[in-house]
Length: 120
Ligand code: SF4
Ligand code: SF4
Image 1: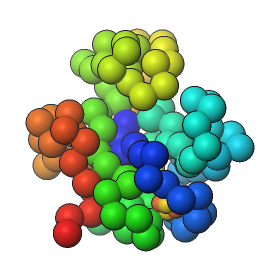
Image 2: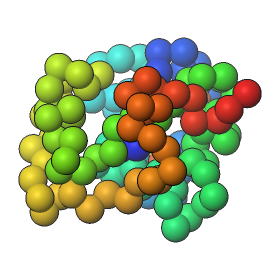
Image 3: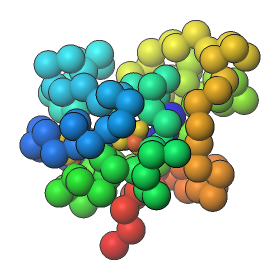
Image 4: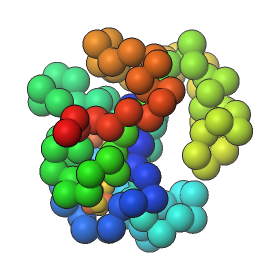
């Protein structure tokens, strides 16, 4: 990951076409079964090499809906494989999967706290 969409999402669709890597799905395809949009952490590149900041969050009209999440790397595989993750889904990461770009200027503390991507 990445970024994560929270339950304040209003399913407005403003984000989905902004994603350069098609990491976002709508409520009908949310693998968690929740009725709102979802970001696949194994697809999201945090818009690195595409935009200066995450385009989904810039487009989102709902304050605080899209927040930072832990980097999707092998170092944090336990986070994504464990109960800590929103959908408790095991992604089966291994070293070969640990290639997702992340913004290194975003601290792990801010990610763990699910800090808003777009500041007030
Ligand atoms: S941060 Fe960028 S790559 Fe990730 S879901 Fe949002 S738009 Fe897509
Ligand atoms: S732009 Fe924000 S509120 Fe709209 S669908 Fe995407 S995450 Fe949900």
